[in-house]
Length: 262
Length: 262
Image (cartoon, rainbow over the protein chains, first blue to last red):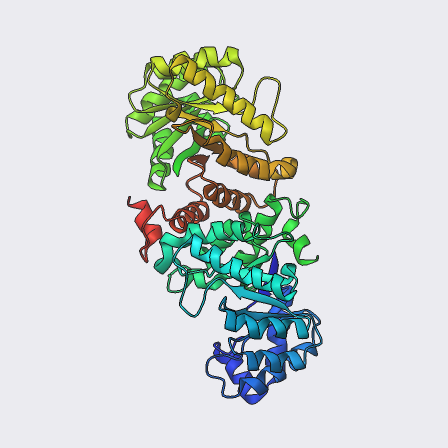
């Protein structure tokens, strides 16, 4: 599993304050703590209250690049914010995200190609969230087909089936799991798959338990990447154990520690 | 998930002692604790050191039937021990277990029919443990086909894919998970599936974590029943949450408590 740390996000008060006051140490600490906990990449989101995300995302990227060469995941629905971040990128980079609408893909795919970025494509459009597996597959196929048309490598595309909170979309959870498997067979080479894990537990009383249970299932269904809180030790241990059972990491008695030293 | 409590087993010293000294209270407490923790049925195994299992299994069955009408699962490879237990059964009953050899099925299937018992069929033979998915499916199909020949209802058959310890059979774990799904399509109506969960973590240092991670995956693959330790709260919570995500229990904020009151 490609683990994308979710904690550098202005929706958290400590990060919002650090962005506002340009407190490098706070951001760099948040980056390092996530990497030590097992993150392969870091999501960067200025947050809903940020007054000047076009400027602030550059500061965030530069601040984080001072302490790590891990992949950065630029998280915004606004192409101007994304492009601003891309202009100062030195590390590997993933754009998070585009919807499936042709007019969105027309903007984000050329941007990804220009900056040699990977791209997260959401299986949703401006018409709203898909209601079943077929709608997810249709939207995902639309994205893959556009990638092929414009010569964007499909293996650099991460398809997101749109994970709903279990207390809202309970009837769709099996469809979402099966979409993870179905997306892989849309094309050869396969696109990759990703979820924003914390969505599944929004509004529930036992968030970590719901998160890790869904993640174990999604891992069994072949999920490639997840945006999550790597500081949640129980979540990471569940993930490591799931990958062990699926024979993706060789067994040793101290397999939990071995993963973190990889 | 049909939860079969594994704790009434003479391999545990307290149970071996209780059997030897005919300590009813100890056995009845072990039955009740498991039921309170969420067990739908209780496995009963006299244990490897038991000198007279033919007699002792009757005492165990009668002792447990004094305090519960839950299904009892008679656990022995010896048909004499099983039949002895069946003679005093009043509750619903499952025989645990037969192998796939014709000479075993010739004994256990008539016994199950005579006493109106369900039957666990192991996807293994006296030649040994299967080495891959195809061998598992072949042995399972052999059991199903014999059931059909002798008129034993396939929906009363629980097929066990033979769960190996992850530190021994790591390369077979995906095959085992896929067998759970494949066994369901051997016939219509489908046979049921069961695993002896604790096997997966034999010899590992984090048994509960390995158990619950495998159980969540197996639940996603459609497992019907598991023999497990219902007193392991983290295991039961993982199972309940997996079933919630799979939409098998309606969401409510206190879904963990709601399950136990079902």
